[in-house]
Image 1 (cartoon, rainbow, N blue to C red):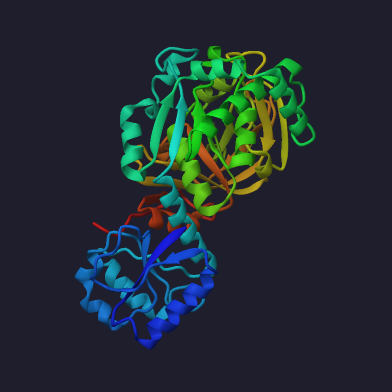
Image 2: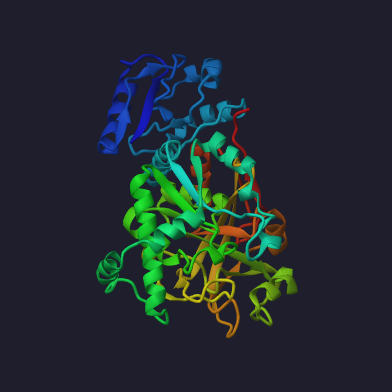
Length: 456
């Protein structure tokens, strides 16, 4: 539960403060924990996720140093409608221009996004991310995988320092042995339970059984380890370790437990998914990007002869992962079916999800390598393309405003797609998380913008 610390500027008994605080408490519907009000300048308890100012006055101009002492996010919610009052814009400008960041919602929906972001941030600080891996420098594609930052100890340290989340590395081989020991009775019982709810086409009975064994082994690991918010497996580069892939498992574990997943044990994608989905509640998924600008370098990797014909091809991106669009939970998808694996480096018994997001606006988002900035680019999912006898049997095509700017600014070939144009909502999320945010060019025109945190 989000813990808020109300702060008054002129005393706890001032009628306007008492009235507005009561209105905000009623608006929260018992979903928040409100600490007893304190005066601006008094120490803020460590338990508080944010400070909230229900009532502003001109006294704020004389309390700049007291505002600067606050380390938590500062919410200014001074109308009974869950928004900032228009009369407080001058005070907000005064504080901002002197290095004090505030978060001032313009609607009750924005207020709820802020609260959701604060709750997600608090939850992450006491959570665990699991990464199953053994041989990072070897495997099926070591020339590719040895380049990735998410394998580095520095990445793990940055995650723990900036978000408080603990990364626990475990053996993929040990997980595979545990999966192999799962009884046939448990497999059959689980198959009967999910049989009418999970569409499966073209995957052999043996393939389905192996997929369920891995799922059940992960269930057992999660039951033994409280507070796991995300998990990933180095499933491609170490595909020889297991006769199956975790695609079905990630779908079921999200639907049943809300577990965030990470293909290839990509910690940076996992943390991005966790931040965006837990804060805003929107559908997310991770996938590979193949900008048309990259030409043969992208075409060769996906084993496709050409990109689909589009006007302004430089502003289009093919996205695909493991033969299809990527791992999408059923509840996020407009179409969904589990199929046999596509990639040759994966065991023939492996599985892959063939699913789709709705066409329309999406946001391409990813955390930077220092874990301090989100890069967010508005895009349009224009449709899907299929290439026979390729590694892209069903990929999506995205349109962005400026393909060159996108390629130059993207933090990774792995990105997270979130449904909707989330530009404004991500601004609020970033403020609540204490992150910078860099926006790609909007589809309607204009220039990219960077919104830094306004606290030195």
